[in-house]
Length: 172
Image (cartoon, rainbow, N blue to C red; front, top):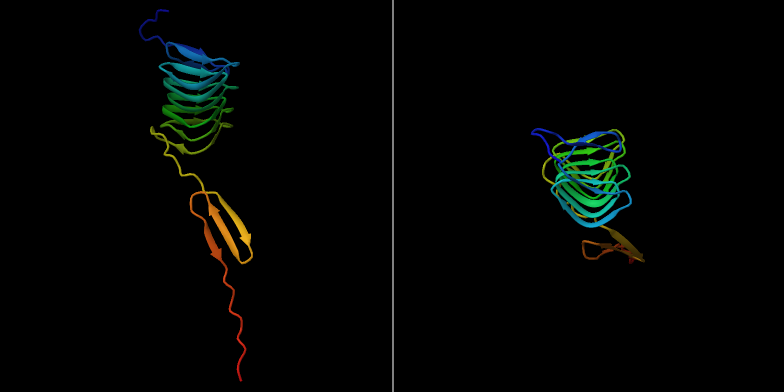
């Protein structure tokens, strides 16, 4: 296909939106499952399922009905389906009214349409969000006179409850 100077290629999403696209694109079909790392110099459009990671110098689009259990790094990201993982968009991130993200997102520009959802940290910058420390989990065991607390990040510690001294009989 020959393009004249200044020509723009677009494609229409399932939702009827016209999108600017790279000269070529990679599509993951609705009945397809791709496991592993995808690295592309073109748009990546997910109608099916991706598990692993997606990196593109262009755009990554997770269409309605698409699922990405993956960390995504791209210039532009559009989520109309579901993403379980972190997203780092160096230029723009759009989450449509049916888009769902469970993970941290970072982008200098964020468009969150009414009905779209993000459960995670949102960083309005071109750098990915820093990893947060994991929460601690505690378990308690109670025995007569003592409680022992165990933490997944600290060594066991014994807490002893002191009883008040018994009154001494008075002499005399």
